[in-house]
Image (cartoon, rainbow, N blue to C red):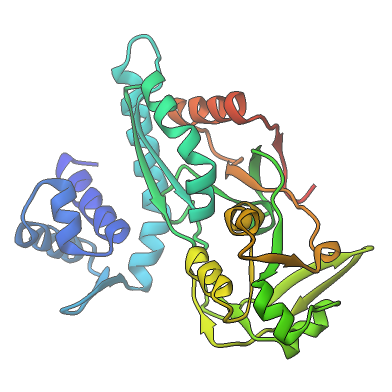
Length: 306
């Protein structure tokens, strides 16, 4: 592969990852017009269109998606190899891309990101916070942090932190006026403050478990919102019942503004996991992050499907 070939492939990969000529050009330190010419040269050389462009968006064609699926992991491996070769003492260095949900970012990663980067200053951490599920391999991430139930079965996973718990809460005035639900099915007759799946935007069904039985209840009410603080505030204002993580609801419960209900239907469950593909060699930076997270928060490598 000639030097010019590498530059063209690197330019194409940047556009796919950033979803924009403008953002990719800024990342590469060149103008959008120069980047556009580079892609035209690559398409002409390969004899196939790689990107569909509009005035507002850019997306890979079918051929472009096939190329990206194979190219991005190769470029990541080259970057990791270059970073390793550049450091004589084998200290972890170079780029480390991690995708995480907001829950993990706020309650897990805030405790370790700063100390990790202070210990390993040669690592450049690119942390993408996004609640939508993504294919970390296809999107060029080294690892992800998610709830255990949302992991793919072929990933190596390291548990971070303790159990989590989702609870149903309502204002005392609301419960006095509308009654206290005794079973999850009672929620279908209540005003509930809902949310949507961040991946497909479908309404989220509240999940319950007791004595080995699991129930998913469709709910409806005056508000659908993907922000936990707004839902809890609305519940405290008496608009309806909310389903929230216990640690988020704790200040409202302690102040008496909210009351928990259906507590025997909301057991704790395993919380967040750091995960990465087990079939690929991992970089020194990722290995250092895995070891640091395990050292700081505890946990052991597992296979989620085991």
